[in-house]
Every structure is written in structure tokens, then in C-alpha cells.
Length: 111
Image (cartoon, rainbow, N blue to C red; front, side, top):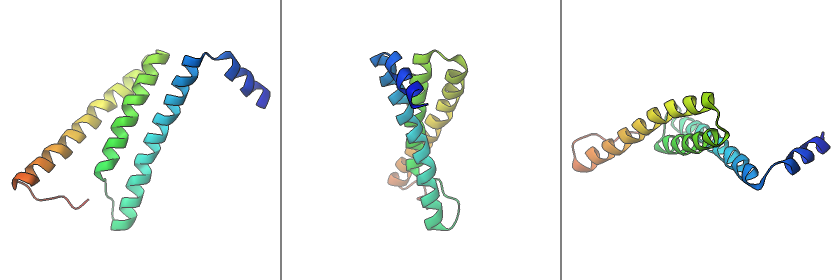
């Protein structure tokens, strides 16, 4: 099995290996969103979605979309592309809420 893995790596171009690295890093960002959300919920003893969750989600989504585009996987591109709209919209809500709180127009969130 190690020989097959070594052979696979040797067959890949440097560009392909860089993109595989980007794909793995993007998956790590997606994983971190759950870790951040889990820790925040444990501390609050209730379900919480912290702001950092959305940044990891958006960052991981952009990177995975780029990876899917590089691999030219239309199913993966569509799935990530649709998600990016939702993630970006939630980041927009976070920013506009912060702006409203700073202006005194809204109550600060507890997460």
C-alpha cells in the first residue's frame, strides 16, 4: 500500500500536488468550523454559532471551490458554489449586525 501511495505521488505534477495540499487545507478549515462551534456551545452550555464559524466556512468553501474548479468537477463546483452564496450572506449579516450595534441600532448578540 505504501508503494502505491509513493507511486501515486511520483506520478503527480508539482501543480497537482500543490492543489491537493490546498484541498486538504480547505478540508481542515471546514473541520475547524465544527471545532469552534463545539467549543463555543460547550462553554455556553447551549447551541451557539460563533462568528468565527462563518469565516472558517467561507474560507474553506472558497478554497474547496477553487480546488473543484481546478479539478474541473462540475458536481463539486455546483455544491460548493451554492454553499458560498449562503456563507457569504451569513457573513454579511454578521457585519451588518455589528455595524448596527456600533451605531446603537441593535442589541449585541450573546454568541
